[in-house]
Length: 225
Image 1 (cartoon, rainbow, N blue to C red):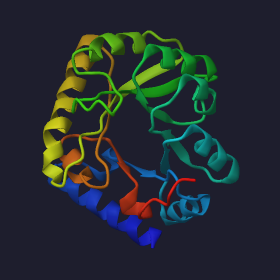
Image 2: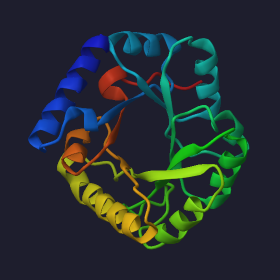
Image 3: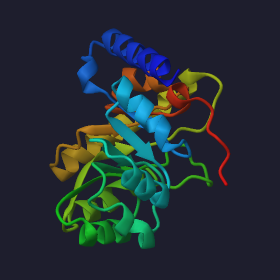
Image 4: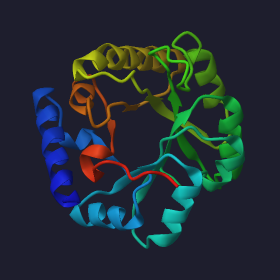
């Protein structure tokens, strides 16, 4: 079942890329495996998935220890500084950094260069983390100056909506913000992490390079605890 859903998502991503005049290779599907068992990750990997996203540092560490697979792990949740040691140097990308303090902690523990993304809250939701569009440049400057950290781009999560098109303005704003920061900082910022199971096709049309897909691949998440 996971294999079938994976192939369906792959096909939809390829079709969305084709409509946008982009190559399917330009978009990384991050299979969000949070709260799903390691066996589900094995199934997805066997079907062809290579990139997996986790929201909780301890769960990431547990799965990495359990799975003897060559996987590209992404940390996509909000990360507390005291959990940075579980993530730094152990993932290809940290998607949701919003403070220089966290970046410094990751840099200290990375054992090399840790790629990160700046999390931006463009929907103005108090319940979500991320910097505002207004202070993104100031924070990005601090991230770029942090030792052992490479700022690769931006990520966002729009407010939930029934209509995928409702996310389009947020995605377009993120792309425009990325372009402004790229010009101001003089760094490439190639990554736009945006789009989830309900709106990833719209995100691809707006320039997403990484889409974070959980339910459409793994099904409904099991309860925590």
